[in-house]
Image (cartoon, rainbow, N blue to C red; front, top):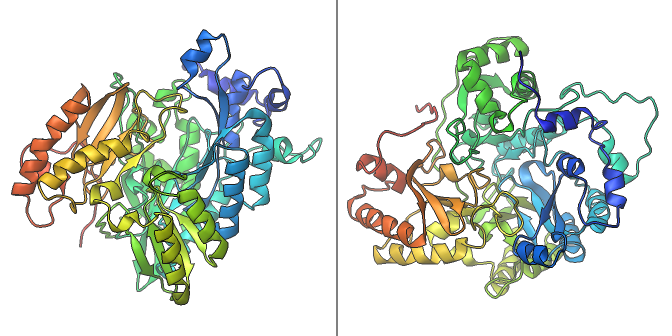
Length: 562
């Protein structure tokens, strides 16, 4: 006897193609919220219902409903936006949102603080920019990630084009999005079938990333489905196919865990979409639809076995997978400053802390990038690490861009510690419903305190991956940090140590449920010894294993080295 379906599965089955009663919920003037089921369905349309947790208790005391608002996320494969699109989103964030943009760890934009009456106008306006939000969230394929600078080489350009084609191919077929947000008239009798997803879509979210060695900026081993580009003589010939990555877990539930993707084999470049379909439909047909905690692809693979999974993929693909090709990664972060692409134009990578584009005392990010967008003749490229590339700059325009970057305090990449440059944090409080501890708001002051230790031992330029997550679900990919704080309760974290700098190794839980003072007391002797004992170019995570501070690595992703 099969286990009963989860409530979300029942909701999807009865949603009439993800429509639910969203139109009625949006029209209800009595509350700032949507009906419970509609709030779940809204995710498929690219938005989350949230409330301000900073004022939740006070509003409850005053017998007021929570301060509801909505976050909207774009679908932006490979993270490429025009200067006009940047300006349009800036205007929307100012008019309808909280006055800032957020660059996500999946190369997309988020606008926060939108009240219900403005939700439809904002989504409609985003579509007018030739972007959309469809399938940016929900139990479908999410935004397809790709190496951040498509003009670094012709192969990078081909990979970006592949990410766009893949994203378009994996979109849901329902017209619910267009009817609800864009006023498309429903066609009576139209075919509403979902040939790829089926009537209940996927058991859980599904993430895809494409990496181009030697930079693993997309953290390809963290993806449900990953592709590692294989380039020969400057030409993209195919990909190593990966599956089964995922960062999420649940505190106290040993059935849940972060996992790195397995390398399955090699596919030709023209097999990309077919291979993606094979993996996605296998998860559709065999994924857990009873317990959402166990519904990601990683659990499907571990339940049935990797050998079974590969055989199933090969059956759906119609041929055996050849062995994976050789590849090497040397880092997982971004390269900051100016670089020149194969087209002769220049590209400037800026550090955007936590991806938050706002005006503050330290940095006028929103105003500065607005001014840059007004004169910029190229485009903007969002990186998987919450940073931004001002791309396609002609040589004679570099000085003008540099002047604006300095004027608005966007030149922090030139003087920040390596630790600060590579740090990631999720949103957490006040808007994330899952947050147990601070992350984004806490990151700057925590970095300040760790930097004091680094300066003490002359480690300011040592590239150490630090990541903070407000809960164990892993939006900031914390389990791939050499140092990671995973929220356990307000002001308390689990301390994880020991990932590598290439995104191939998970870290280990080192201490559980400790406060800031304990974290710093734990880190200082480790960093002191690292400074004194490290070998040339040895990364912090590697040192922890070599020195015996940590035991045998928990999981190491397969890597083929020449």
